[in-house]
Image 1: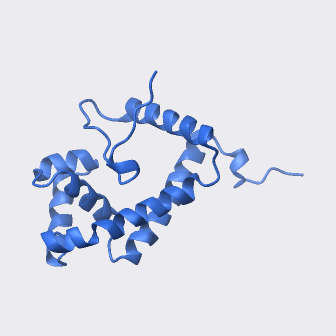
Image 2 (image 1 turned 60 degrees about the horizontal axis):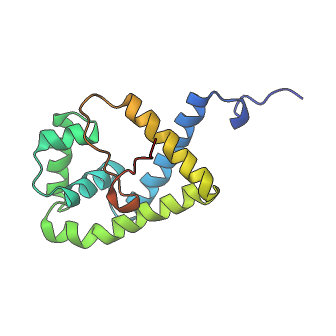
Length: 151
């Protein structure tokens, strides 16, 4: 029987990780669109909820995007009413729930030990790939902060 080109078992680790990230991103996009946000806007709002008043250049660095990207994103969000304090606060729990739902979906096929192993490996890769001086990872999953595994 010939190898299927798109069989996950036949992908390199990098290809598989890229595919899982893309698929997870697609799911997150759908969830964010369901509450009226673009995926990137959800991450921006979540970061702002934890760091109210943060400078745009610091926000850009934390989200791994250019300051110009953050500026235009914030302008669109302001135009659409997303970064008015009351609307952002009102949407906070709805957006958090969307992130939690995705986390449950992604991890539902893993055992507790598998989740812990995967998280440890991804943290290790993140630490290796992130630019020097990169701020701690802030994510909507698990209360807003990446957990560091003991080594």
